[in-house]
Length: 439
Image (tube, rainbow, N blue to C red):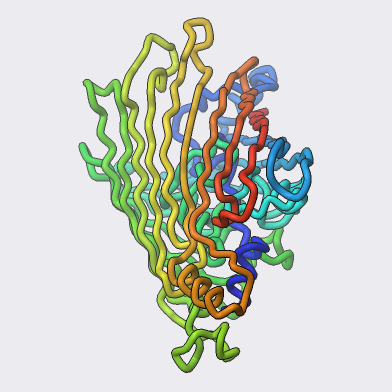
């Protein structure tokens, strides 16, 4: 129990950060990509390579942050990620029908403002930091499509957050970025840039959406630096992780207002320590006995996104878009057990700036109530400082603009109320700048 309580403030189980918004999470479609590139089409070379069966991805995301209030000291910090990937159409290259191969490497570098400035937050203010500032194999999988693409099978080195509870990463605070389950139980669900051996089966449901299920090897060695560049199978697996998701993808108002409504759950056969109880059934922080181990980890999530209005912008997302994300995990093994976030994004606020965005989001990450109850008990007995952790609340506002094709800049303001889920911490104001480049 004492170790668990200490890990909350120390951010010992730092959640991982997913990819940049335009990083590849699936093989390219059968038509040439239309996303603009900062370096152009290389005199037509990229299109020629695509026609041959090779689609290249080269990207960068950088996040600068400065805490104008809160923390131990005010600092400026920068962290970034570079990406090199390629999608190989094996039907064009070796006549293997309806099959693509995705290979992606990422490199992370920089500093973490949460740690350097002593912010003591549950969620990162620079989402791209984490899981080791190093080069990693992030994706290596084959994808097969059957029955006119009604059925898709993907297998290899994959991440759960690429396919399940997948969400964009336009905001800079991790509360509003990427697959939420990995934000609250990052000790056994690994989002980008960590990959695991696994497989996903997805079935399209015409006029409705899809259902999909997956299975992933559960092993903490994927976080290590050993053989991080190669598709090795690490020994001594802890079990398997099995997510399931069903999605409704309506297109309202005659197709002008698309939506995405995803409901999912996961179950892991791995074993973790109970956050409060010891092997005798008492409170481990009082008895000093080892924590009892619990097998069967589980959780549930919702990801809702809907375009509400459509303006005259040339961008198909032009208008007001809304989202709500909710994730909850079991109370036996999860330190942070619940996250709820929602927000609005308006694209095309000015006729002369059809791709600009104004966005606002609010969210909370909550400490397991069993831990909060144990802290109240310990505090009442005078056995630890009277710091009771409940919920952290985060707000973020950004303006996104694209000055040239392939370059997106998003200055942002973040406000964190009760950082670290503790009312004893000073509230935090962070000034940020997120830059995304698609070369």
